[in-house]
Image 1 (cartoon, rainbow, N blue to C red):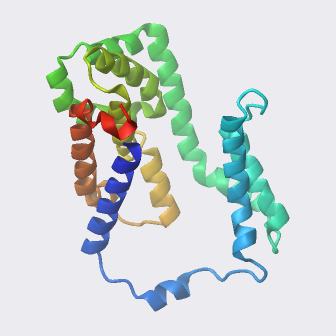
Image 2 (tube, rainbow, N blue to C red; image 1 turned 120 degrees about the horizontal axis):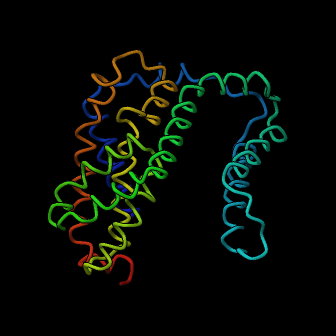
Length: 251
């Protein structure tokens, strides 16, 4: 179910945004691409990704013998392999300095959000928010989760998964709905809030990476409203008819 939602949303977004944009001059676009260093080939370029996939799968295939190293260290190891396979040795220190400088604002936002989550947990607000959502009538949840989940993601980022996800899974399971199908739908709805204020972490990172000079909300976010609406509608339908869609997971 997660693959269906993700691929459908990605395809609709790609065709919608590409179809409404200006035609791209292919030759000009190719000319603007950075020149490939001599010696690079598909074998060299694929090694870091092979290492990444191998480390992730090793933890799944050998859960009792392979050490738990975590995704940050996995990405670091995969990145370090570039130093050994690249025909042109990258300037590690300048690249690291530029990365930290570009992401400092986003990292600061994540630190503030983490502090906010700890304060809500200590004060009891976290439990109050969870209780307020799961005590809503099921019909009200169907009509409001499409806005509650993205907005909460925009405020609390990844902390919303334990805040709302666990109680909602238990609630939907008790109501006779398929919690796996529902969780897949929520997993697609939540990330849409990553471009919403006040944090907008992924949205701001995308704008920085693409060197977008237009208005963030008036240009970037506005252009994504229709694809966001399509994804939210599709995810809501999956959530409502999760019991009927149990065949997707062999249920």
